Length: 258
Image (tube, rainbow, N blue to C red; front, side, top):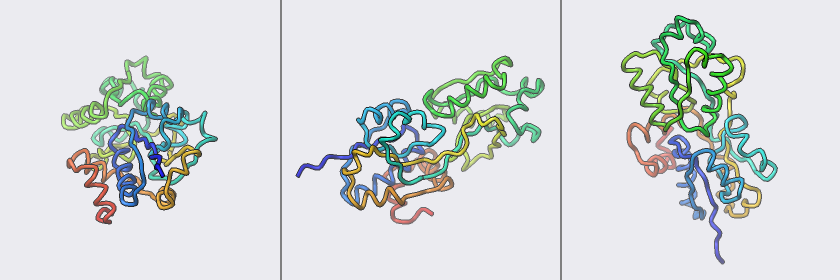
């Protein structure tokens, strides 16, 4: 009997990869057949809607990625919450404590000192969409602020370089993320709800593809969870310490990561 492999998608960012690697490593141990697809946000969810991908590890719901699955939500099963991500606008901890909410940036003295270019990641990410709305909603565009898309390295390297030089800057970020393992980043309060609130990183699968899962695989994706602190640690292992995804996954499955 020919086995139809499960088509699995992961977003092309490190913290998505480390969590997906653990699930896939477990699938390998139980003989679950699959093929992996790695794409940017919008491309991956487009493939999911077209049923070219059966499962995504994992979708940030309801805020960041909810709009991408809206038209196929009735055809989607939602399984385990891997962690509970949320987006922030953050500033380095050396900025004055009086800068505690986004509206504080509009103070002329503060606005004059802060870098006007807010370096983000790719356009399809929730934090990119949220950041553009914040700039417009708070009138920051009239003060010269602009959001710039780029790679994850563009975003993190801009912050790391600025931190070393004690620059005043804003980073559009999210938790969990490896920078929080090393740096103290102060989230700015945003009472208008423009950052989307707390999401659930959810394993989703097209209902018609559930029969491709073995019983053990189905049980695993119902139960598996990591939490934000562990994902931050795993992301740091991958991005900074240079550990491979396979080693990280194997170490986790051997219960050496806590």
